[in-house]
Image (tube, rainbow, N blue to C red; front, side, top):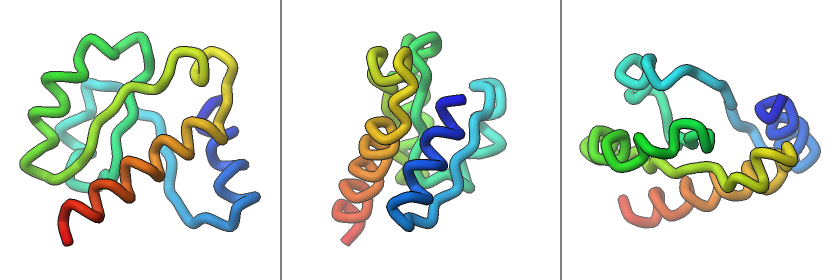
Length: 93
């Protein structure tokens, strides 16, 4: 449901993004395709390990704010993802 709200927010802003939800167990399969990885609060405890694994790929990993997650604020979560992407892009220049 949060993914759908993020997609709606992106569409209303005319921002072209691909947003998917995958289990943490698929991390190794998606890391080469991802630009940003956001973790739900239930797997936040894996943030440090996944961030370290994603670093060589230049992919930022962050946890979704629990309030934004719980209230399904797709616009706020999308803002977070886009800010991470912008920061990552600036770091590679």
